Length: 95
Image 1 (cartoon, rainbow, N blue to C red):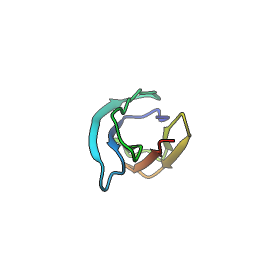
Image 2: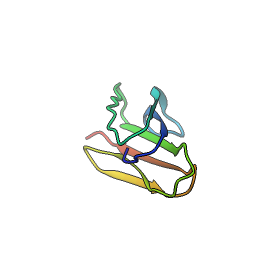
Image 3: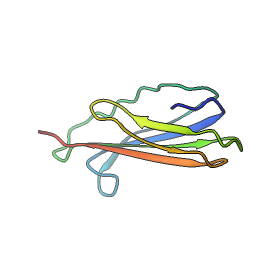
Image 4: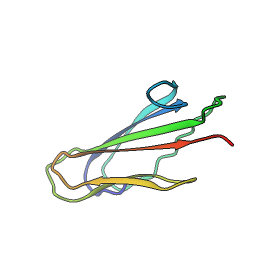
């Protein structure tokens, strides 16, 4: 999370896809400065795992909030809207 104002974030981890997979991890974080949070999604699935995260600015500023999921791939999304919300998902298929 890259944002200097107040923010809230939630995450959900699935075995398989969010549409049909089993939810195995979820939680929320709150902060008032840039932060990195570690999340582990584990379990057995022939379809892989998916991690989805959503973050919201908790103020009316027009500064940009950047939400990203890193390694093994980097995915990101951002918003500059007052009280804006952004979401990212990362699916990791198994070999």
